[in-house]
Image 1: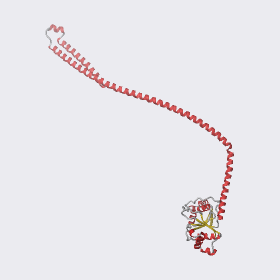
Image 2 (image 1 turned 45 degrees about the vertical axis):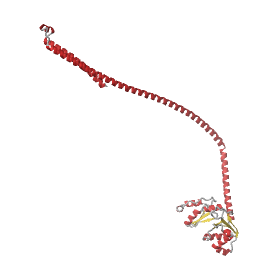
Image 3 (image 1 turned 30 degrees about the horizontal axis):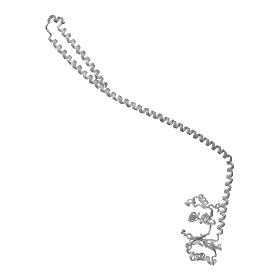
Image 4 (image 1 turned 90 degrees about the vertical axis):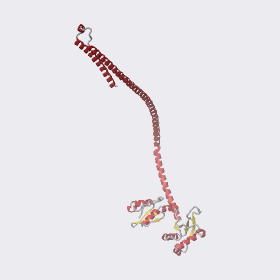
Length: 374
């Protein structure tokens, strides 16, 4: 647009210069005419009726110059009008663009104003929310302080009687420990008495249930002894049986294994001879003869099974002594253990044995503390 305006100004200047040149040419031509033919008075004096030939030519030239000047002026005018129309169109377009930009800016300003209002409302809501939370926190803090104060008061009240309560608790714990020790001692004593009452008993495991339907149990026991260790009968002539029965007495058809047979012998030496013979060789009958003990003692003995098997593999000559004590022979000494925990502590102190024992012993019922002996 600036270039168009500059062209318009240049056209205006050219028109003005052209008019000046034409005017100057006219003056020069007339002056030259008069200077050549003299003044008008002189021409009239010389020849009043004669018209110089060059005057007509000059007039024609002037007319031609005027027509050219008018044509140039009209052309320049049209050019100027075209330039002005172009400028007007460009100004109109610029005005349209400016109006669009103004409308866009107004819309953006409106949106920014709306956003500012929303932000202001949001800030107000956040401020109100923070104020509510602050008030609630103050209430909660006050409530917590009240509760803490109440707890402190309660603790002070409890501390006033806590020492007495602790002393009573300590006394009661000592009494309970003593009672527990007495109970353990009584249980151990009861088991020992019951085991001693069974010292003449012989337990037969695995005897089928249908055997005692054909024969009496005492006859079956004599046949087992006669079949497997006749030398005992040769020495004693007869096995004196005080009583013999199944345990438990009532048959349970859901059980897949036969009930044990308990035989009470009149002679303890006979029972020991039979047990020694059963340890030396397996009986031909599919039965196993063991000593009759209470369930708790059997459980304690069963806890040694894994350790007993491993010790036997190592050639340490294991034995289970009454009631449930394990003995081994190591480095020319006999070592005795009342519980599996004692045995585990013993091998932990001996790296040579600890490497060989890759099994953990089963937990056994606590028995009296006996320690190790040589």
